[in-house]
Length: 311
Image (cartoon, rainbow, N blue to C red):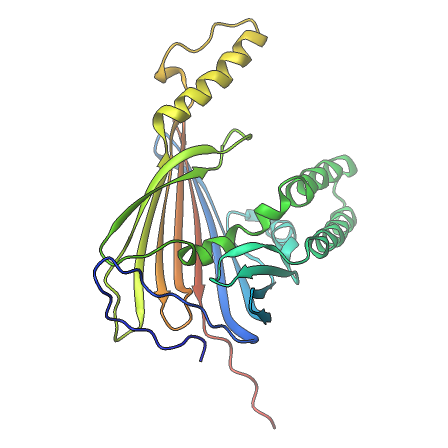
């Protein structure tokens, strides 16, 4: 068994007892779906979607926690590639074959990468292969060099470890907070700055629905949005500094600020037998002037393919 039997009768104000007891070996197979929609004045302009299979395995277990490995399969581009589908899949699959080894604390929360150097070696090798493949297809040398520079900064630059752990932390998020059935809990967080730079302060809340004892599952709902006043002050200070450098007048009010909204919602369907979600639906919406971008990340447990029968 992956988890000791849970008591499903929760006393009032008592957190749901999520206590992972994962054993060494294969844990689950995930399907990661990432999508993006871009709108101008509420008119859909473009969409993209990729699907990646991931094998999750427990590599080590001790009194202090676990080492969990995510092994990435081939990323398929489902939407948005057009005539460049082969190229898009090649670039989207920089993770293909990667072993992402993650250190977890005793409560199952993410502590960091177990082997950051292995991740860097993987990306360095995959970028070399991608560059070689693009040049062999006859793509302009200068264009390829610019693309490789951009890709290298994205996967090997400062903050690469944090970006590599985004989906892992998303999956393990519910293990990091007390979940009391029916109680709405407020919290402070951060949301990525769409202009680059430091993240923006944000305010959110989460709620756990009453657990379904028969199905051994429970739903959790998170919301998070930028703190309006703090974010407005940060953007105003940034734009004022830029205006002064360029000899232009600073913005005068809220209507002059480009960021009109930034928020996200996340839904979890927890498997109470192993403490992790069966399904995660994460949606982030960014509004800049008249442009709206919706980023979607879905993680769901899927059935492993049946092994071939011996002949």
